[in-house]
Image 1 (cartoon, rainbow, N blue to C red):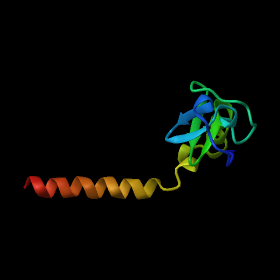
Image 2 (cartoon, rainbow, N blue to C red):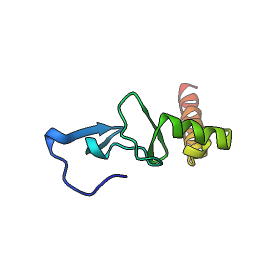
Image 3 (cartoon, helix red, strand yellow):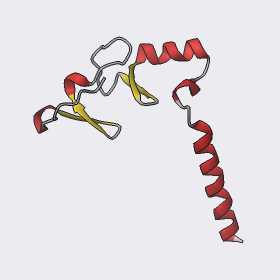
Length: 88
């Protein structure tokens, strides 16, 4: 849902490390304009609260938004085991 146009200071909005126009801050499902209180990030997409919850209801888990979950778990486990070894 992000455009490829330049973002100038007066129309700039930074959300989760992304810089975008205020008007481009929309739900990827219904295109409802989002605010900082009414959005959730799922994977690379931004959702309104309604559609984020709907995805959970359909799948029964939020894992649909975290396809690399195992990757992060392995990274955390590796980091924890390295710190354990360094303490010995």
